Length: 367
Image (cartoon, rainbow, N blue to C red; front, top):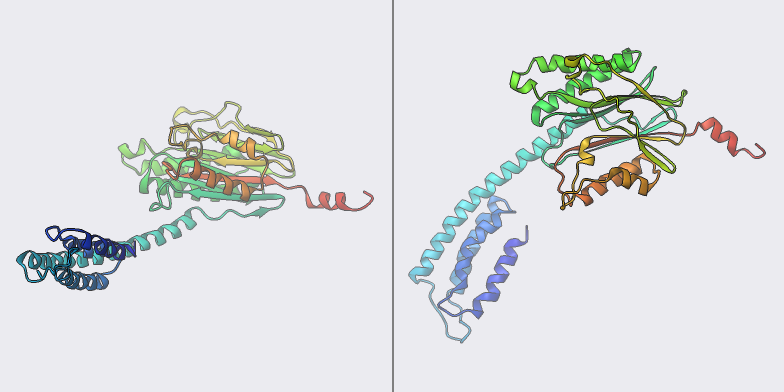
């Protein structure tokens, strides 16, 4: 874009000697200041305007393709072109000044959004005991760095407690609801002894937040979520699913959903139906990996409208380290959708590493 004015002038220079006198291409220079305003500041646009007027005056006196000198610098048509170029240059200078102000404002907004995202979605601990954790968040819009998708991992005396969720709706209300949910989870994860109590505590916070909204807004303030707990010493993972896509268990030769068909209603709806919080327990042994994700992953579509085949991709890739897995998933989603994501996506990967002591024992000669 910065070289667009130069290319525009070069095009005029190529076409001017090839056209008859009756078709003066130099009139196209009227738009040159506007072209410059797309990528340059007001001072340079003003300089380009002066250059365009002088260049028009020069071209009006150059010989045409037949060798005859035109000499129309002071013809009324060219005088009108000079005035129009100056007017367009004045407007282009204002446009460039306004564009730069908007770009600075957008940069400030993005900076604040980045800070808010780091506060809302803090980096998860990469290593907790024998667990290695990684996460990623991908916004559907470059201008909107944060949204309603959320994740968290909290090491507690009860084990590592994980959360992945998706707030119904968009915009500031979704972000506020996500902040409420994350704040409640971070505190309650240390206090509540089991997952049903933790899920109930989080749902109470979401319901309390919903009560502060108008009736039209509160009807859409619910959250799908998965709350999981990994106790490495027990080699098991406990899962409470609140209407969210089920986690995936990845191990050599196997990728499967952790779903026994007992998903409870989303948060803020469970209190209405009065259903309990069922807990499913699955084996989780060294080498196993847990992938939690939002529906933005599986609802990603290609140009033909086909949904992203997550299970097929994971089975094709085989077991990967958490960071490599999420990076590959990230790039594959962008490639599959041709960079046309329509929803935010978030994912959290956790792998149980072999116990270091056992690994050292196996590595000793003669054991």
